[in-house]
Image (cartoon, rainbow, N blue to C red; front, top):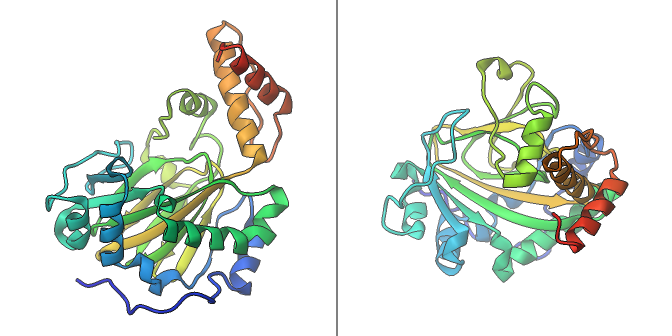
Length: 289
């Protein structure tokens, strides 16, 4: 199946129109929101362009994983079904894999695309501070791929480029995510979440097709399932001053726990944790954390 659209000149085109920015503004930063975009025909996001990008990127940043997963399971790594990641991408319809290009902005042309998106979003996202640590993740997925239940410690907009998928988002509170899980993540980076079928209650399922995007709030638990055709998605993530402050506060809490204290958890975003963040920086300078 050929997912590659005709190549077009996108030099002066807007990616997010006024309607998209209005929808983002109405939801940001605490609620998920769907809106449109113009990236579905972008020449950098065809199968062949992405296969060539995979060949040029640091191999450590090109990850191949099993498509057959379940909620409560792991992100299982897998060998490339067709020899190389690039060839797996070219044959993604039958590969039974999903390939992630992590930090695609390490290639200059994708860095330019990321910067354009950040600039267009700034009138909305800048209300809660400048976008920091922006990153681009590109997912090329076989039909039926399921990304297990997890959360990410950043804001995220997922741009659906080709194919369709269902993206389920959950509230940032128990029973979907709890204090112990968040603290564990800030120690060991494990962002997978425990699963029970009851967690489907309260989830909001967003149907995404080529040309649609979804804003996912900071730390919102979610799972994703690709439909019957191969999928290409671009995920733009970023942090801001407040989320980085909360990250430092969680790390300081973990250190206090190891010292035998029982600290209260940092607040939920957009709450601030200036004191604990400052103490984390001080402890870091002393080599304690």
